[in-house]
Amino acid sequence: MTAVQTSRSPALCGMARMFLGLRARMESLGLNFTVWDQEGRLFGEPHGTCTFCQTMHGAGAPCMEHLSAVAHEAVDRDAGTWRETSCGCCVMATPIRHRRRTIGAVGVCYPTDRWLDEEHLARRCDALRLDRRVMESLARSASGRSAAEAERLLPMVEWLLEEEQSLHTARGELETLSTNLANTYEELSLLYSISGSMKVTQQPQNFLLQVCRELREVMNLSAAAAIIYEHPPAIPEDIVVVAGDVDLTAEQIQLLVSTHIARKVQRDKRPLVDNQFVWRSHPALAQSICNLMAVPLVSDQSLGVLLGLNKKAGDFNSVDIKLMSSVGSQSAVFMANNLLYADLQELLMGVLHALTATIDAKDPYTCGHSHRVAEISKCLSEKLKLPGEKVQQIYLAGLLHDIGKIGVSERTLCKPGKLTDEEYEEIKKHPGIGAKILGGIRQLDDILGGILCHHERYDGRGYPQGLCGKDVPLEARIIGLADCFDAMTSDRTYRGALPLEAVIDEIRTHAGTQFDPEVVEKFLTLDLEGFLDELRQPAETVFPVTIGQEAGK
Image 1 (cartoon, rainbow, N blue to C red):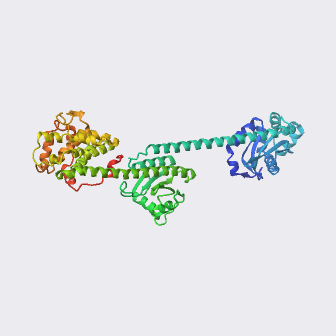
Image 2: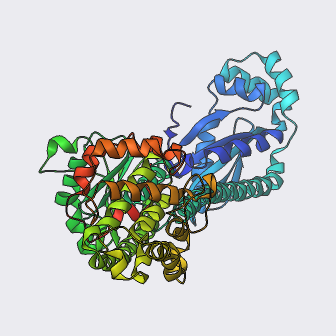
């Protein structure tokens, strides 16, 4: 027994679970089961199925040497073989094949009916110093087959081995398929989630923060990050977005990309994988990163970089590359569309500002009035915690609230004294004219209420419809207050600007009559003095892009 060596063959180790099932089936047939490598070395531990064999093995019977020899022969011949040993046992072996290569052999043995012969029993018990009476009893319960039965048993052993190998392969393929399906489901869920959040009005950093969070979870990363390159006016400077835990600041991640990654991914336009990360120029910072993967965000131009940092289990592999590349492609589409939207929005707002400037050109005393009303309305809307899209609509309505004055004569608009009843009736037409002018533009439908109703009063004494209380659209109540505030704090042909204290008193006095009291309450919490100083600065001619995008939280 001591002459038999043990093996830890990697190929056989991969079949360890299969051998457990095969052993159980052999033992049900009363056969002792062993596995041998191609050099005739024992794999694992031998297991006797009966007390007789265990006793013989413990007494030093050369069972393992016989099995080793027959296993080696089966490997050499690449065919099953058997023999009866001098000790009265039958040993068999059949080769184990894996990927068209013989990697070892399955060995089985059983005691033959020779052990029922008294002379043989006595001779073997004396040689092994075993108790004859005990072994006779054990032999009668274990020795039921003749050596000739090996001719019938060997094909059965071969068939059982082939069947277990087929089951083992099927189980492995099923497990692989299940794993791949689970991974594919996670990847599809991630891509679906990302595509569902690709709103062109969303801030790029908010979108990419969500992308990084989901990448980190699906890919089991310590952190994920994105660098968005400067692209005015939508992105005035580089932006760094980080999700997860990494011992680097945003500035250090930006340094990492600019010095170690950007040039490579921009040149090759494909993912960069570094599973043995080394940052020679910054060795102290490199200690925070074990491995990384970077994917360029590229459309017609380079838009940024998506980073995966410190995969928690193993290295980045081809599956990770495929997933992150898909996410990077979707993110690049979003970024390109977002920049295009920003350009179109800037063009639109430039046109709208030019349009409102025509009103200022007719009346120099109201120069900048539309811009100031829009800014006041925006700040008040934000104070009321309205959604970002609603704030945008109110800003636009404030900017265009007096567009109807195009239809009012300059003589009436610029008259320095008190208006006659006829002139006042002419002025009162401007909300309706403005709504009519813009009514043919479908995209501006949501702001028409603010334009048409900004001269309605909370007590119902306004125009043109005489609406009352909450029937007046909220945007009109906001713009109406902003309009009056700017009018009172500005110089006009018929009077100079009123002191801020007097304006505040006037607004407070008319809360509940001319103005919505809830809107007045929020308005008076603003820093009105500082706000006035800001409003008196030269008006912008280009609409700030961030106003037109959703405010992310």
